[in-house]
Length: 106
Image (cartoon, rainbow, N blue to C red; front, side, top):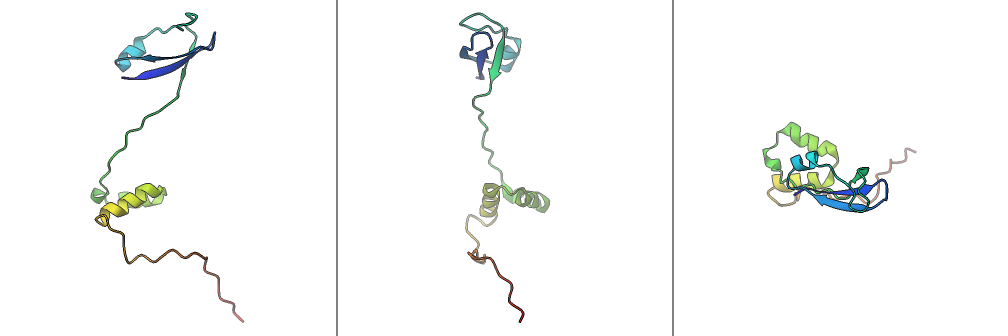
């Protein structure tokens, strides 16, 4: 059930109102419960985003490249985990702690 937060522009009272459907929200003529004003501002206080379980094994090479280029570390890690069967790649070279410096040409 969608629930929305509002602030009255007249008296600054904050309140929440739930609706059984989005259509009821669209049709509602809300008033402040404290002063009965119709001058209300809808507040965005919390947003819930459902987690999608993406099957990276079914992606085309172009889609996998898009994931890599996105720079989203968690998505890239999950893609590699799924594609490798949940095991890390033992062929991967360990990360170098120091940058490579050019050799002096004397």
